Length: 327
Ligand SMILES: NC(=O)c1ccc[n+]([C@@H]2O[C@H](COP(=O)([O-])OP(=O)(O)OC[C@H]3O[C@@H](n4cnc5c(N)ncnc54)[C@H](O)[C@@H]3O)[C@@H](O)[C@H]2O)c1
Image (cartoon, rainbow, N blue to C red; front, top):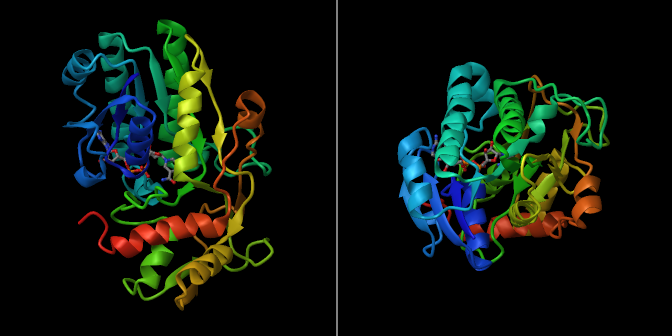
């Protein structure tokens, strides 16, 4: 297939580009490079540097490269920033996605996989989180992703769009061959932060809250390896149905605490990793992990790289080889 990967120079998008190329697809990566990195894009893909807000130019690219399907990873994705600057999030994640959908419609592209998030559930009533739980996001970021889910449903109804909106839990790790990795600036994800402490680039890891009702008092999250995550996108793409939306959690179905993550990083790196215990952050639920049952039941799909040490090891190998990221 001819696939456009929007946000293809970002962390997850660049892994999707690599996987799609390895599976024999023709890939056009589209990215405005505000957060992404040119060097992250596989050399066998075409990179077009542009903002997905530009409907006419984007439609022309879709037409020129006979695009069959779009994977849309482009977004602003910092929960805290979204509270401080909500309109940035509604503009980039909602308005610019609408412009992108207009381009798909103009060019007659009818297949889409869109990055949604477990942040759409807010503070869930129970864990594991199943897809039918109410979605009550507690940040503008989560709200913006839920708005797009609604827009996609209505667009599917009106125009016959076939789409999937996988809801990611915490995405982690790097491609297993070590060629690409995670380089967010600023970095807010725990595994890269702990590995930057291991590299001596930060003094200590902050543990936000040590009095949660969990076994060791720290927050529990579900970590899915980025390669599994992008593999699931292909499964969803192959199962799209005109006029319908597919909603699936992408997680492994078990959680690890902050202390367990730090311990795994100590084990993998062999480094002493100092920590600092600080106050809880508002809006951090004690435990969030997915029920992966719907993916398993409908597509016999399960994450394969579920060993925490292996996930950390893949990230560590990339960080060791690229201590300054893509810079
Ligand atoms: N990383 C996670 O753990 C996680 C969890 C849940 C959901 N998500 C979602 O997955 C997607 C990818 O996340 P990521 O971690 O790879 O983020 P990222 O910032 O590394 O990648 C996003 C890419 O999109 C590009 N971009 C942003 N706005 C654009 C625009 N208007 N036009 C063109 N390009 C634009 C950026 O330059 C960047 O390369 C996001 O939609 C995010 O909300 C990520």
